[in-house]
Structures are given as C-alpha cells and as structure tokens.
Image (cartoon, rainbow, N blue to C red):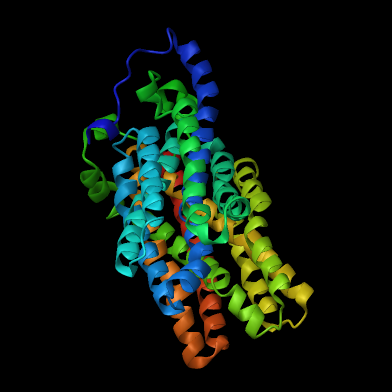
Length: 450
C-alpha cells in the first residue's frame, strides 16, 4: 500500500520507559482529537448531498425516485466500503489513511459542481460513498491502540459525538455559503463550500493527529502500560502484526461468534435509527399534522439530543459498569422500545417531539457501545476487520431495513406495519445486548482462570 502502509518510526521518542509512559499519556488525546476532527469532516462531504436534493429536483428536473436511487446507491457503496476499508485500516498508517479518504471525497464534491448528467452524477456519488468508508476504520484503530479498556468507553463517547457535530455543521456551512453566492450558484454552496472547509481540516489533522503508537516511536499499549493489559478481554499476539488483513479477518473475525453478535446489535441500531430518522418529515407532515417548522425542530432535536447521552454512556460504562458495555445499551434499548409506542400513538405535538428527542438521545448509546465492544472482542491487530464486518452488516441489512423495507411495508400495509418493524428490531436489540453481555462475562471468567 506504500504511502498508506504503517510507517516505521524514524526514531524513538522516549529514552526510558517512564518517559515513554508520560509521552503516551500526552499524545493519546491528540490522536483522539485528530480522528474526531477527521470523522466529523467526512460528514461535511457526505450529508451535503441531502441538502442539494431540492436543487437537483428544481434545476435538473430529477424526480424523487431518481434522487432516492442516488441516495440508496451511495449508502450501499458506503456500507460495502466500510467492510473493506476498515479491514485495510489495520495495516495502514491511520492518519494518512483518513486524510487520503477525505481528499478523495473533496475531489468528488469538486466534480459534482460540473456534473449535469444523471449517470455521471450517480457514478461520482458511488465513488464518494466508497471513499467515505475510509473514515471509521482509522478512528476505531486509533482508540484501540491508544486507550486501555478502562478508558475506552469515555474515548469512544467523545469520538462518537463527531457524528453529530459533523452532521450538524452541514446546514450552517451551506446556508452561509448560499447567503454569499446567488441561488443559481447552488453547486458552490452545496458542494464546494463544505469541500473547502474539509481541506482546512485535513491540514489540521495532518499536523495535530497521530498514527498508532509504534509508528510514532513509542511502545505498544500493552508494553507501555502492562497493568492495563491484564484487563483486556482478548490478548494480542505480537506475531500477528505481520499477518495480512485478510488472514486476520479469517482468523479472528469470520469464525468469531461475538463479532457476529455485536454486528446483529448494530443492525438493530441502524434499523431503528434510519427507520425513525428517514421517515420523520413524511410521517409528521402527513399523519401527525405537523407544520414544516415544527417538523424541522423535531428533526433537529433527534440528532442533537444524542450528544450528551453518547458522552454520558461512555463514562458510565467505564466508571460504573467497569468496562462492561452492554448494560447501558440494554437500558437505552428498553427506553427506545417504550418511546416508539409513545411516538406512534400520541397526538400531541409536544409529546411527539419529546419522544423523538428521547429516541435520538438513546439510539446513539447502543451504537457507541457497539463500537467499543467491537474493539474488545478481537485482538488489537484485528479491530479494523471486526469493525468492517459490523459496518457492512449495519448498512446493508440495518439501514436498508429502516429505509427500503420500512417504506415498502408502510406503502403496502400502512404505517402500522413500519412501526411493527421498528418494534421487532428494538426487541432483537435487547436480546442481542443480553447475549453479548453474557459472552463478555464468559470472556472475563476465562481471562481470570488463565
């Protein structure tokens, strides 16, 4: 992979073990800040497509079906790419890997500014969906290599809100750019303005971020902090670091029932998340009698309500549940199940809006916990591969169920069928949390016995 491969350190940063520990403690937060900024930037050049859809309809004459096909194509490309690219991140310099993906996405957005042909646009969009898959792998690999189990929930919670920060900044950037240019220059506002911001972020990530500790002249986590290595659920064999990404996937992920179980959990999360989020505008406007302003507020609180809960869930899993990730996820899914019934049955604008805020607040808790749990059920060298499997399943199965399958059921049998689908996935999510927690306890007992 050349430029993207794990880079050998030019020199050792520390002259002694004590100095290495001190530097490790300082640099881990810069490494986390780098992937936080980088992953937030990915959303700026992905979610901006949704904001351009009215202009694609009005200026280019594309109907809702054609725009919907574009969205589905991008999600499919993104889901498959998460599976492939996350596995490759295990063997890559994660800082360079993340930045290259961002630069390629910037290039795609630049090309959007010239595309008027539907099929040319679709091709660029699918390429953009593919390179977008280069963001999550470096993030989880960074957390796995820099943070021990006792801190991983907090670190993942902090990184997790980058989803919401990046997604939330798309609208202000495009709105601000639209105020500076004429309406007929919507391509500049929707595509080039977010791309320009991402270019600046790439520079910041390059100078602020770090790759894995060994690439930076530091010892690996288990050597720098041997006392923390005792708490890991799965031991990393140093000889595995020379194995290929495919061999690591076949050895530690494909036959690993825990990797499939946490993937099932994430499928349930994505089915509920997309099943609610995708249909908020249509359901509230057509069924619940909301006006456009009330609907926009409800849509906004669904996303932004996740920030405090994601942070809190990570801290709670570290400090109260001592590194066990499933109790907070189980509690959140239980609340989601009840709240879906309230959202479905209520006729009050205030109760419906509060229900959406609570679902949005809770749904990112099991999502965050799934990220952390994935890091801890495989050796450190296979974290990207396990993340790839989970990401592939969550988009191809979960997101598709919440969008295409929900839409089909609602069209064919009414909205009630769509809500039954959400309830089914919420129940399955609760079951997955229980089974995953039991499996973690089993791993802990096996580690203690050894």
